[in-house]
Length: 211
Image (cartoon, rainbow, N blue to C red; front, side):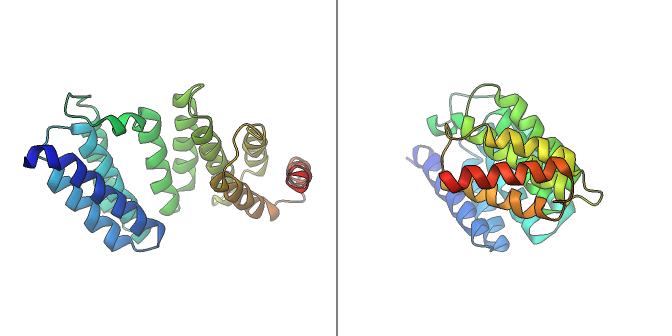
């Protein structure tokens, strides 16, 4: 009975970890992710363990602990490399190599490792291929933001990525993407004197004005 219950318990802990991180409570996010790993460990799904290790990494990153984040990320990649198993729950199908790369990129961003975050988000977009348009749009927005806020900003690269984000509209329409576009605008505003950036800002405002 315990083995049947484990994936559901692990999933619940994982959701708690996500909620805690979204609410700015990194220690709770870490604790919930570690609880998930304890529950899932005996179930036989290395991929699910990998996801929960990456959830833990996200908590450590939000807390600003780079060493603990790296350890959790390395563990997540090592577990993922073990491959799928019959014990993997159906809902885990979203956790592809692209998502693994994307989640690491988000952790890198929280650690202010902007170059690595941009590269990871770019990898996530490439690995998604033609699937999951919403995810590709969100990660492309991340690329734009990271290029804009890195220690040595690359506003032209940021504007190029930001233009790719606009290309997803109106096919992809979600509150999260609209919020990300607003974040891109905020990040690029400081580089408004660059022609490519100015052009993007004008295009963005035109599109959102008529939406």
